[in-house]
Amino acid sequence: MFNKQELIDFCNNARENFLSHISIDCVVFGFHEGQLKVLVLKMKNEDSWYLPGGFVLKNEPIDEAANRILKDRTGMDEIFLQQFHVFGDPERSRPHNEMYKDYLPPSENWFANRFLTIGYYALVDFVHVNPTPDSHSELCAWYDLADMPKMELDHAAILKTALDTLRLQLNYQPIGYNLMPKEFTMPELQKLYETILNQKLDRRNFQRRMLAFGILSRSEEPRKGGAHKAPFLYSFDLENYQNALKEGLKGGW
Amino acid sequence: MFNKQELIDFCNNARENFLSHISIDCVVFGFHEGQLKVLVLKMKNEDSWYLPGGFVLKNEPIDEAANRILKDRTGMDEIFLQQFHVFGDPERSRPHNEMYKDYLPPSENWFANRFLTIGYYALVDFVHVNPTPDSHSELCAWYDLADMPKMELDHAAILKTALDTLRLQLNYQPIGYNLMPKEFTMPELQKLYETILNQKLDRRNFQRRMLAFGILSRSEEPRKGGAHKAPFLYSFDLENYQNALKEGLKGGW
DNA sequence: TACTATTGTGTTATTAATACACCAAGTGCA
DNA sequence: TGCACTTGGTGTATTAATAACACAATAGTA
Image 1: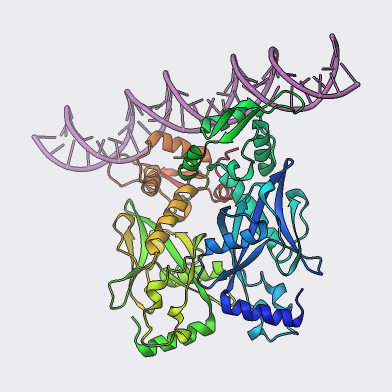
Image 2 (image 1 turned 120 degrees about the vertical axis):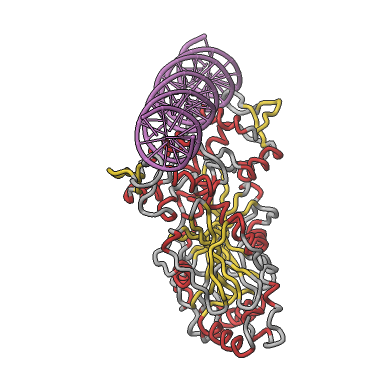
């Protein structure tokens, strides 16, 4: 993916600006046409796929680093982002460590380092994302969760952990606001939940429960023009939603 | 806490063996006499307190590093340990960065670095712990959660986050096994829950719920000899317990 | 206009959570 | 020994949450 000169430049730049041994990888979830999507990158001249990631500037908070990385890949600001796990097996970055050993000695080769990676997951409104490859990628694109390409390193495991975390999160936090468009119908929201959980839910019980949370407001006008019965449009009541994020949806004890 | 020569030795050793920029801090919870306890260290010749922590060896998985650090402080092996958050504000280690600037230039001073710290929390059986200070501490001791000394850096925030995580955990995972002795009475287990949650629970409902989880087995003999009515002794059914850890106690959706 | 797909809503049964009261066993003391 | 007090064990009624289920309304299409 790099030729020798590019590698040298990259390494010099990285060594000067970034914290060593630490990377960030992001699992960006979007929702479109009833499918949960994940943003992935394809390296130049290689059939290898990665989650969007990057490094932490020497004087940058890690949450800001994750935001910066995602802004570069999506064009979006103020993304819903959550740190979920650190992947710290010394073997995890091994395949990369060998990569450029003919070009540079390990001491000068940024990729010869072991990297811990901090996993973040992001929830974004699919249509607002402008997938943008980085300098060593030829493609940045959405993939269906059910149809992901084989990813390098431990990125498949990172994705799995992110998904598990998201599913857990669902039980005590509202999540639709960041994944749905401003207005949506109840069946559309249900589809989101069903997709994340990979499980059918009962329409009537879903609606009752969702409304009981008190985070939705129904607009006056139903959606017109579509086929079939005109569904009501809902949007999130942001104040109650934020509150539910903080307080949790229902307590255990 | 270090004199100049100690500092130089420490830094040389650290630079050679540890990953830079990364530390681990552990919140060790124990339970004794109806109180939730946390293990803390006091620096030599200073009135400053810290959570037990350390660094990651260059070729060591981070979970192993946390285990090693805790084994050194507690004498215990196979501790229940859970990674819960990375604290990555560049300001968090600032107070330490200045500490030895008269002894060594920043490039040679391990403590002049910014550190991300990976937070782990541990649940241990109080009586099995042998609190052991490290080389730059004069004391390693249990403190009541309600009566913690003022800690350095962001260690109070780390503790708070650990406690919040533990309280959340309580809702979908069993936790008593690691904190209670082998055999215990139902009121004792209840006290543990009440202490963690800082809230009174109803005796009868607690017992019903706990038994419904199916992770307890009642021994034949009640505890004799104590004052008052002899309570039954329970222990955890390890197989069901492990299963509940994996599966979660009750699902949301 | 019948048919079909989709959405909206209500009712009942089951299960879980909460609130509450009584009995049993042991201690200490008059 | 009888009584007060403490701790622990268990049951039951009420309420709330969840799960299961059926029918009516609307808009497009054949």
